Length: 308
Image (cartoon, rainbow, N blue to C red):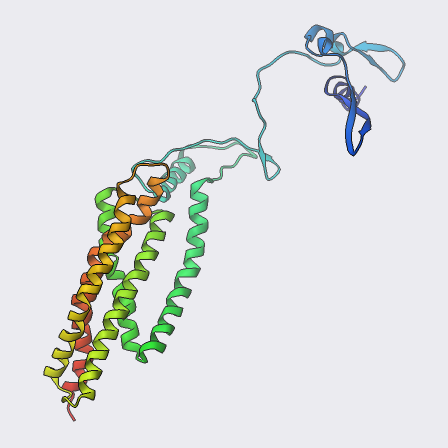
């Protein structure tokens, strides 16, 4: 007898074989035939099962195969057509990317896999890689679109670059608060920084618009285009934005502080989204109220001092 014949007999006798189906209304149920449970649950009775050979002789199954009880895995998992086993790792106090990098280096150095065995890093790290791959495409494309919109709005390349250049410096407060709270970079914090970048860009756009309007209003009123007129226009435009900007910051902080202080389900993720916004509400307003007027004076004051 060959192995395939023995396996087919064992499969039919112990596992069962479908010989037909029964129809009850619109439902169909398979009809399976196999040995009774008292036979399948006894090792000795399985050894005594008769197996019909090609010559007509009946041989006990125990004479053809070794039958015994052994402990095995409660579940057999497979992925991509290969058997797989999972090792779960919890990360605390460090960012996920650096932990996986250290684990990869240690495994490559100290672990020797047998033939046909490989390791794959999955879970949240896989989601982080996918998000990072998307952000590498989305963020540059978004910056280009924002630059084009700013150029169409202001009509000057230097003013559009001023707004874009101010955004990274406005994010400093978010990085400092994350450092003080011990948060690591993740997808959630990246979402918070994207929201903070949008708010800081809005601060810069509004401030620059008020500065330009004050300067153009004074020129339209017949005032000379000189340094004192420029300084007066900058003071006027910047002072007009102090109260609205303070109200905007207060509203954002009032909405985000309860999230930072909460401890309910899901609060850990929400805190990492809100932390960059809360920290950035310190540096972004200061940058727009103090730095942008100074840079605007340099941009507008240079033509005033240029020799005729």
